[in-house]
Length: 358
Image (cartoon, rainbow, N blue to C red; front, side):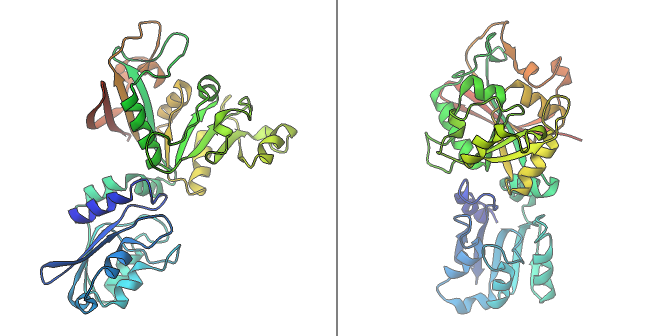
């Protein structure tokens, strides 16, 4: 199963919104085949593993290992559970079940009903960790949400005049682009777009551009800004009051996908935003927004993970503190967190962790 996970990781940033899956086939105590899901829309891990077996007659006495429940429905490809049955593989070991509605235990049930020996929940926690975005999204029916920001050593994310660009070093910014390539979407709000005019694409590393998501309730961000260029697709969320309004026409003519959201006390209803993104098959969103968006997500408990870069700089007491950006009055107000990774990029410290909500 550990080898399955190692193989599956090769699909990082290449298969979303699908999960990362690896598969290994063993017969006579020897590995006779292995494969992984290489690209969205391409063959699944089980297919590639079975194809890699040189002596197909060995499949009738083999054990197939896979870190996620084999699919049982027709999507971009035929069901993997049917392929396993077709080749007469008698034993299947599965890391974790698949909560996706089209699967959700049906793959395991089909294999067991056909008389196969099926063992599940092997290294379940490791398997869940690898595909936390996919599994969380289909469990909560909204995207997996990651908050990312950089802060100074004295705990500030911006200077007093709200300038926040280049707090972290070039190595951290390179890793930020790597993070972008790992997730389906990247989100900012109006003020971040106006202040920084970011492109929100992947440039310093190889990888797919995320879908850019802009929350612009009153349509303040000009179409000439970088977020609307042709480098990557952009989704615009604006107020319901602009539906059918002439002011929206230029955005539609530029093939910007526009969704209209009901106002919620002067801002867009974020639950509605993420419900639409889930419907659009965007299973993970990296939030690079400012303090207003981040604090709203924390207040609504609409965030699962945090990525923080701590730079060895001092911005001074007139800046915007990280505590303020999270909408907290004091550190004691902070939600419970778990810290997973501490890693250095150049002179900066990268911290990766999760929010622990009730």
